[in-house]
Image (tube, rainbow, N blue to C red):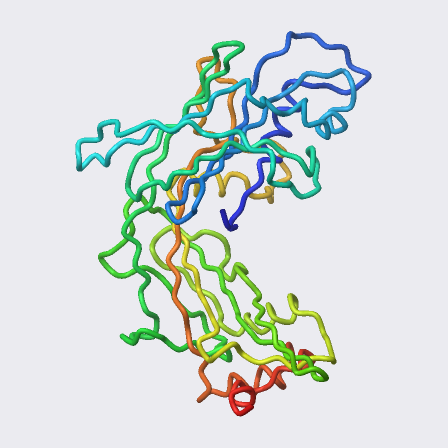
Length: 352
């Protein structure tokens, strides 16, 4: 899932490490306790749903070194992971079906604090439904311990067209420095949603100056809003897109670049539930000199030894046309941020 994305559970697992491990020069004073750390974010638009589940560990050695060993942080097939699907409350809220997730180790993980590139994920291949409640059930076959959580998926999303237009393709002026509001339709706030943020994709064509070969490329899914905003509307300055292009496209004097048609800007407006929003806010770096911080989790176990979150989010995408009347193409070619990227007007590639 994007941001798509995507949050890391490094903070949560580091908390686990601090709870159940110690420095090499400190003697252990307690028995090992099974601590489960869960990361699950459901999106009905995703083909597959993935749940990441770590386990805590106990060591007299360096905890960060141990984190590099996949065996120390993974349950493998020692746990059974299920998703119970319930109808919306408006339809009675009864249990519809139960899915058992597959154990998957074929998707590589980027290098970081914890073991890589191999990781253990739990995957559901069946599509999930908008507006349905899902209960996560993790059963440890060795200890009999059960960990649970639940969330209700986002439903009925509809992007409001900015600028008050009603055309199928709206126009975005990249030269605009004033905040530009994007949000969901008035009186059509998505069900189960709590907050929103927005991402931008800019699609372009790259043409080799010598061979004339063309390649379609894109700067994809760049966050343009200041994190999640509670409510159904957020805003950003469209001219920030020029800087995004400058930061994400390499200078190459061997190519020309063109907007990939005039409808080359996509905006994804994401909505999340209150669980995700609360976790997101509490996981932000503290600006206080006080070290203690609030730790949020909606993962439950009888012994309270479980951390993380299981939540929902989804998005709605709209495509926007460059505002040529306000000289967006000229700014791409000659503006301070993108003048070295060799952008040319889209009409030039049309004439060939």
